[in-house]
Length: 231
Image (tube, rainbow, N blue to C red; front, side, top):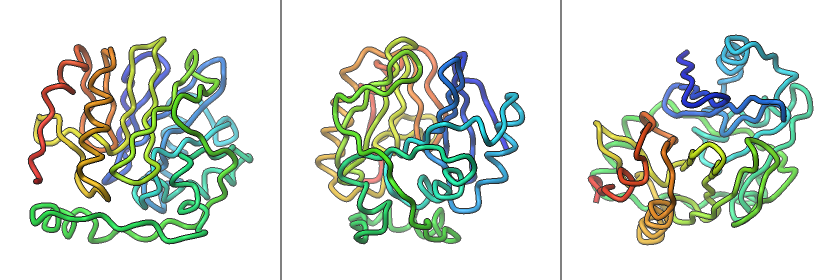
């Protein structure tokens, strides 16, 4: 279990095939994404490493409904009644009211998915306490701005922490073999690319991805150089 401080107050949690992020400050602890099903013990260990317990998690924010990001949301939210937030377009899939749309794979993505998702199990249904949309401001990290980034999934969201110069992109953008890239496995590739361009127009110093290593320093420039290696 790898826990890395990205900026003061924000830690990267590597949860197997995906990343989660933990914000901890005077405004409490917020977990952004929860990894695949069964990540509860690893999240508990990560909390302990930064001096927190399960009861300190007040909020879970899901960037999208995919199993490797929402897989442990139901477990984490059961610990101490943490509220669960998700994008308006993805909330019904998290709640199990409808099946989420499948990605449209390119040939390269189909090969990659068969490897990275071979052992991935389905995320348990989880309640959603608050549906969030573009421009909503969440009460942590000095004001966290929700950005709608449809394409990877219909209701994908990114989180901008302007007070800290940080952007959490979910799976709209990824780091792959040293490059910043369009995240693979999209339901609408064209819309995902448009969302990437929208995020690249922000002025941020740090970019944190759902997969791969963060970019620390001059992140906006790195996002503007993003490529699509899986087309």
